[in-house]
Length: 265
Image (tube, rainbow, N blue to C red; front, side, top):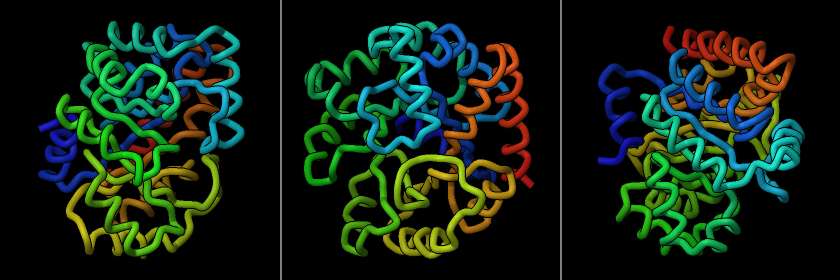
């Protein structure tokens, strides 16, 4: 069993909902990223999604795009992110999910990329620009190395496509709650509830809901609709970037506790 599957299995035993924070590696710097991963882990994160800064982030909204730009300007690269993870993952209980685009994987070759991320302690991958039709080779190679590649279901997906993605996705299923890019929103669309029900009808895999969740009441709502995990990104990235690095770390620790309390009540 993979680290991610094991995490969800443990949570399911107590009927618990997972909290998956997202932060951008290298914003404001990789030293702070390493500290942030530990803060998230110590304050209730079940798994942690770490974004590798990329120059053409199609799925990212303005907050995460700005963070990626700052990280790239600081010289953050995939090798430097993985070096930081190699030193940090042994200190964490929460499995690390790397959020990266497909081009860096192709550039290094699928097998080579998987070997280097595995050696850095990465447990899973989310690749927003990887279409289902081109995913088989990567999914097969990743499964052999016990790395979960989690696929995304868009709210506009057809019933047939939902079923196909649900079958193929590893670790859990990532349900995108809105049409468009990531970002803080004041409300979560009620159709997410129907989509969760639709996915549940075709699979027993865990379902994580992300994009747009920024407040504890929204996290609670998604949990009450039947989600296995709540994924929160822009709200974390924004908090970590405000003030000094120490203030940002304190802010994300407090935010994690508030989200965890909301989905544990």
